[in-house]
Length: 196
Length: 366
Image 1: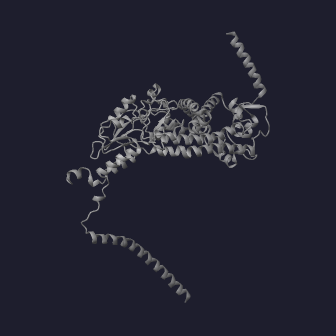
Image 2: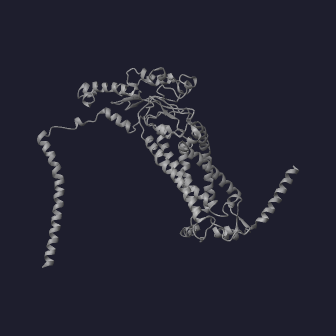
Image 3: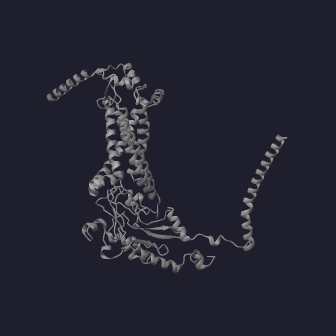
């Protein structure tokens, strides 16, 4: 059985936001809720890097560990999903998640948030696959159709990889071997000489 | 002769000790420098090592990300963060799922067991003289109303709060996931809406009773004699004894204000507080609330089962004169000095029936 993983190659990501747009459009995610976002480190400075982040579908997911109603479950493919019918919108998964993946429709006084929403790895939820309930609560279910997440499929530079962890790791390892990992072999100085 | 040789031996010992110390200091500098001098001999002084040791920029970026350095994102929304990786969540998870739930649970069970053991060993503090049948006013109606509003709110908040902390372990096996989620949804809203109201009542309570809770010398004597909980001694006390003052200052003021402030941080996530702040607030809120609930068990025990004749002061507002003399002698003297006359139970009963009759008559005439 595959162990599904996302991997964003920071050397390839060009911050085009296509993954974000693809996700929003595919699942019709409402305003203010972002299942995927691109974070730019050192924005506008030399060495700027961008990384596309969503739920990382952790093996030992902190969100699942702290959930008071135990609404999370991991599929056979290693995808972390949750049941919106059980979710009470307490916000604990948002505190616990290292990646800031859990989102809620509202942020109001008295802690009223609504049901948590997050990346499903395009795998829907506990409802029957392709049902109306699944579509409105969790978005489309591409995994059930034998397809991979749309964000990665859309990625123009193939920076964002999604799929079986072994295959993703293989692709990434080949890339690193090809381009080299030592600092002398890359960057402005390597390309344009020591004076650049 | 032997004294002289003894002196010489001592001097010799001191000298050798001093020289050893000097040798250690010199060698600790000289030996590592030797390596440096040898490297200079082999590679020459021109060779620089720092260039090749420059950190890998890729590794730098991931190190920054791992240490929680923020970035920039074009996405907007109340829950969108510009941080790639945050550590606080894992730390919070370790605390909440580890010591908070484990020790917190055993702490509450432990307190209940201790109280039960105390009751079994020492029993109830009885009215030594029995009831006199004469009563004085202890708590006025508005004081009792405030007390019971706060008390009932506290119990509701404690039950709903503990449900969120322990429900997954204790209640899901009983109610099933759907049943518990439905209850937890309601419990969370009750907790979130009742909490601020409780805080206001708590503040009113602090303002109302602070003047009776100023510590004094009598309280010191009261503590030295163990508060009369054990044994037959009955230390003097004013309107509130030392134990009640500790409950006021530690329970109501310290725990109450801490739980209210941290609860406010959690309940109103609209002031831009980060999840770091809220995770810390959750730990403070839960840990202090657990301690408070443990303390509350003690307060509730002493006020009901532990002391004969205490509860009626807070329910009907009047206490037996013998109870007042036994537990709050100085206060009782004050009450008499103010000119209040103890009233017998029979008389109160008579007045009550008369009032009820008058009340119904009045209503009938409308």
